[in-house]
Image (cartoon, rainbow, N blue to C red; front, side, top):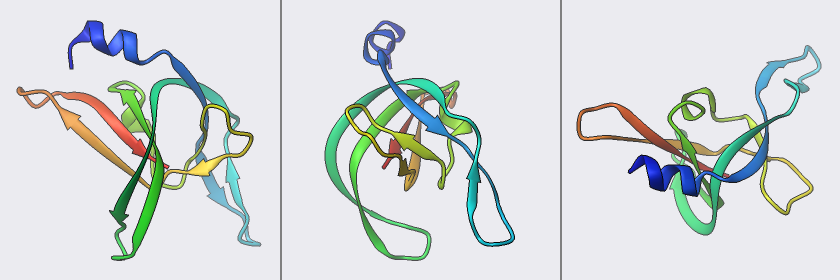
Length: 108
């Protein structure tokens, strides 16, 4: 993706909480929320997870190559115009022709 286009697209801000651990009771704990720049698309897509189950994603986030690799399945993201956090279902990296990471699509 052209750097000019990327700068114009990645202007929306969402809140992200990274999964840190699971307590002895089974409760998940997360790091403090931090903001990341992205481009949010409201689009429904059918995904198949690692267990072979069909799941639906209703929101896609395009994030840049600096933030994308730090996001992982199980982290929480609060999309724009939402009051609740949603788990990351899947991440899909896209590479430039020379094999360098360009951006990552995050499915919620």
